[in-house]
Length: 486
Image (cartoon, rainbow, N blue to C red; front, side, top):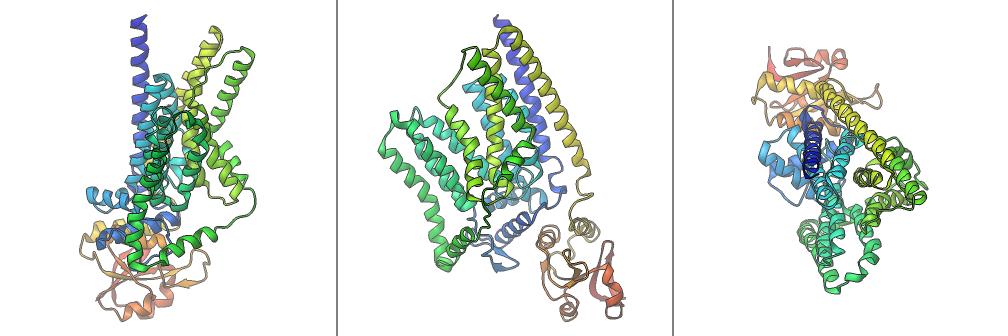
């Protein structure tokens, strides 16, 4: 019997190790080659680059001007800057922190399940985490936004509440994590705080007021340190911008689109099927295996969804923590289900779970293989991204730090010329060549003899008479000019 248990333990450890490897590959493989995925990522990337370049910790800027558009406190930017310190400035290092926090989230939850439940639950969770496609593909795990860090802090906060059932001092850790979450995504930390408030009744048997006051102090302290430093720079201006973002959030009634997004994710569907089977079996067979943490974990899953449906503001990433909670719950209930079923049904359930593990590994491997094409397609700025990589390979550091102007066509109105930079083009210019992007187009460039010019090739016929004779440094997707003459 002991030998059989040791064998099963070894098998599950190998399964978890395999999924950990696949998750690591899905997070980090060709991470720096995929380019920017959205405007938020581009904006945050420029913020972090300029803070790092100018050696600032509190004040973030965009294109050299103090930024009041991104009204998030700087913890997410600090994470990017830490990556720059280790790896240098690059698209990879800009995204690295998000991928790292995703892997840490997986590691913490997998370890928790293995210790508090069993290795079988941890193995199912590992497969589910690998299969969270939406979290890898947009705005989170492989992206330079702050949602991966926020989800990691949310996860730790939930586990702190779990620990507070037996040791009320864990609420102090919960408060501190809420403070860090505020420094990451400002008012969005309120969702974590409200989960804690709703879970307070479960702590009534272990209630100690001094620890709740300690939690308030632990949460307020890091926020206060940052707020004082920020206030000394520009008074209430930044905080007024933060308040304006909350007031200006677009709301349009109940946002049931969140439910549609959830049901598109296989992990959510699997959770619904497994839990329905579990509760049906528990009801008809009069068997159950309930633990005190269940309410907390369901609150973790359900509250972000319900809250964001009710406030009427839709951004798919607002409920990303719920996807992680779903993978966690799937591990728990997939482990419990065979234990309450008759032997034959339990064996069939285990067989189905084994097939699901294999399918998850296969699909995960397929998604990883797709990353080999990273950088070959994408949004409208990918041509410029690949152009700059070629420019860097060709010219090395010779033009690093140069001022650069652009004459382009608007990606929103194809017939309209623009002489300013889209956010993502500013980001690529910073990260690949350390260019200083300036506005004004051809006209401004002609009077700045040390600068470079980028020209959309579709505009060559219009500017041929002005630009003929200037050295073309590169002729690919765009034309790159210097003030040197042939």
